[in-house]
Amino acid sequence: MNVSLSTPLVLSRAERPRVVPPPVEWRPVMLAIAEAMGGPEGRAEFLRQWAEVEGPFPRLYRFGQAILRGLRGIAHFSWANAGENSLWELFFNNTAFAQAPLILASSSAGSIFVATHTATPGQTGNQQTNESGYPNYARVAVARSGAGWTITGNNPVVAENAAAITFPTSGSGGTTPESETYFSMGQETSGAGVIYGFAALSATLVVNNGITPSFAIDAATCNFT
Image (tube, rainbow, N blue to C red; front, side, top):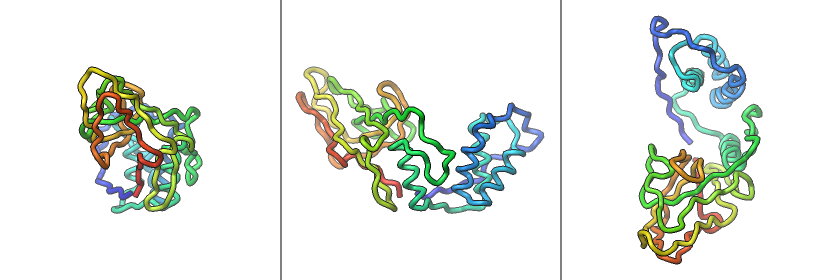
């Protein structure tokens, strides 16, 4: 994955009223990210910026500013194979980040909710954007574990569903046939939840009454390049 960094917003001290400092327990995680991405220089610059940054920023934005400044001077950044694997294993398998032990797995792994869509949900959409609506449709929960996702390869690292992802069988009534063209992975079992990522299906899936949409094992694929 290539990451391009733009110059962060900087306000003069006259424009920056004091705010309540962020919780100190956040610093080790962000420091680990800055060090993993920027090496010793990233670590040193993050610590310096942590002490200096003040302003009317939301807490997370302030953290982001410090990390971006810790990476100043890096115009082009590439993840190493070990870092790519660790990120995908953290996201899909809830495995602690191997190269930065302070980035821990969740105490409760939870699930990734897979949905289908009749058109692209887009970068700014949510789980309900163009989501399927055939009779009986519902999202499918896939566990954040090795039973849910298999992580393989290097450059690209590939995450694939370890078991079939089977949606409810289409019932009678409603609007059928319905053509599904995209799938997504998101946060919530229903409602306008956050989408983590989405992709076009390799072929349009036409859902008629009695059809049971399903992704075979290894058919829902996510690449980290």
